[in-house]
Length: 301
Image 1 (cartoon, rainbow, N blue to C red):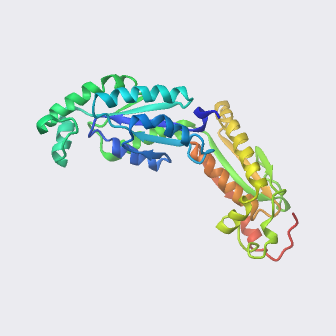
Image 2: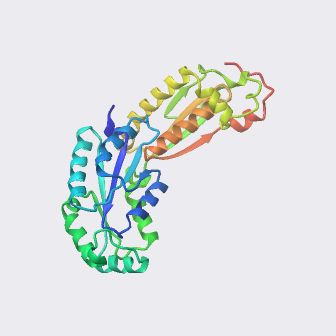
Image 3: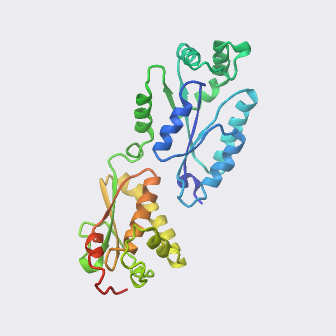
């Protein structure tokens, strides 16, 4: 497995009180799976495990605190091991001025983790010295000295939002029924009429591919699972090349007979998969309304 392409790993660290916890919350809003206060020694194994989820988790953010010299040496070793197993990573270092950090601690009445005899400034200065080398390794440094929570959110979205990863590139996934005609502006067309058809299951016929019962039926077959794995692998290969070529909109059409069950289910799944990989994506079910209105019409495989 190409681990570097399978998952995007962001390590969130920095000065205590600079906004690491808030940054993780905003990254979660951007689609990252977030784990806070992770011991550095667990980072390589966790990244490897999440990299084997076949795209279910493609964006992982790990919050790591440095609370002593031992932890500092652990994180350097963990970064090395993570790179050795083929997982690429970025380091987001959160910082703020000593004055602001002292004020934040006084406002919250919390004790700094490295403060001796409760002196906040001593703890801050000790932590800054411990983190000096790690700060030099950072991919991004965000100084929150003059930032509001809203400012931090905007900055994280600018750096890690989908438009930041693939600016100017949008994917449109369309489900359709072949009996209603082709999608004329489609760049890629996938015919899923070979998959088992829920139309012939009486309880499922009046439903659509957006209903859980239909999705469960469509996805339970080994044939569907094999096709979906190959579909995501193929699309995953193509997307970065289309984006690099400068294409602004890529339309992927998935068709079944009526555009009501199989194509709808798979279009939703593919759109979610693309979104988790950091692309701007929309989904359209072109023929689902008219197919749903004609449930008494005979549908062929």
